[in-house]
Length: 298
Image (cartoon, rainbow, N blue to C red; front, side, top):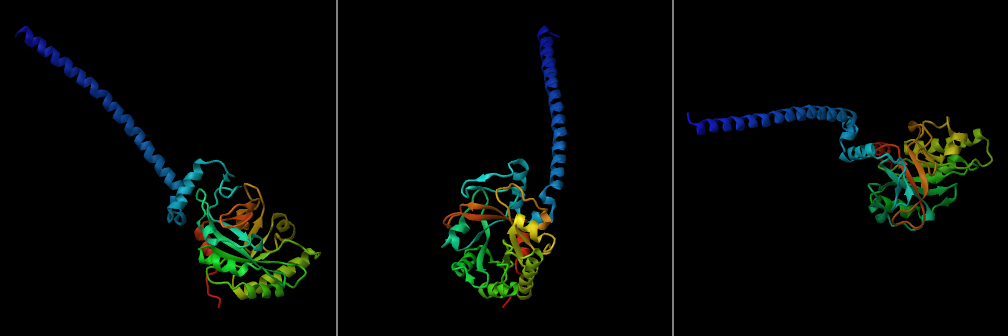
């Protein structure tokens, strides 16, 4: 064999040897990738089990899942929303307002179209009456136009403790004509009126009983946090509760005790002059739908 042939073979062996050495790292790299691929798959499975996808109620809505994932990585529990010009507690996804003649003429189409980082107005409580003689002059307009613009509506009565609870209930229901799909009637109780605690509770109960008898749903009780603790707690626990407690990242009540939280009284809302109360609902859209009046009344 010639010298050139031997050199040629030697070169070929070196090339093959280099190729073999190049293949080996690739195999190691592939094994390394597969190792982490299985860990990644396992992590995804764990997250799916622990995520809202696991719960039937949330699996029906991609929006809820997206919000859950967002909440998982955002730790500011009380962020400021520029358009509403207030801080809004996180992890609540159904928002609303309450209004009266104080807000004057409202452009409900602007209320409905307003949105800030996913926060929009879903419901509105509207003042209807007070005592046994006062009807809010803007009630009928607000009652009609809120529904026409896709806002879930509710009506409330401001309670005067020294007036008959039963007569106040009659007056309230003569003014507010509830329909299927409305929020339950609301009793707004904020003063004791020189009555004893027992006398106040008895008069409140008379109002609630009469409204429930006519509308066939349990009314919602609205009050301030301290008033609730001092005069109502333990007596009306079977009724949906709406609590006013401002400028706090959390409401200091067990979640099972309340449905609505009025967390701010100085919000800016499109279509409304001046400041407005802002509320959150303790649940999702499906929970709110379940709370609405489910039957025809007239």
